[in-house]
Length: 168
Image (cartoon, rainbow, N blue to C red; front, side, top):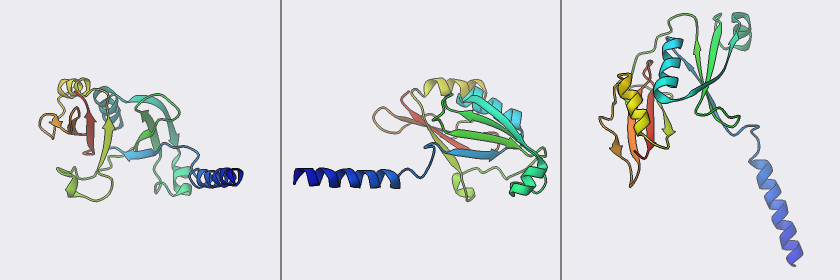
């Protein structure tokens, strides 16, 4: 009886594991079209603290063939929170033109992806960089978000909202 229950457990575990393993990587890569690639790279590396881990281009012919653009080349810079294989990718790209999107004042101003949440070990170093680079803090000061957790809201140069949460 014990052997049968153990075998059943192993079979169920194997089935559950297979059902949960459809993805070859557990991280998500997010592509963000930006107006000014260098300005955005500077913001995400020098203010937020991400690291540049790579870059690539996709020719306009290939972009058209793949359905990515209607004849623009994509120049993509890959940023991560840390330089590791498992880290999610924040892929900034430029179309070589000044693509414009209205800058939102509040998350409720538009549909689609509006914000990312970054959990930090300490909020103060980020706050220091935000102040040094004169980035407007939308949440005013860091707001208490639990016993030892604080919340800071800023926007990138294109208006995407970034929540930073962690202890001071």
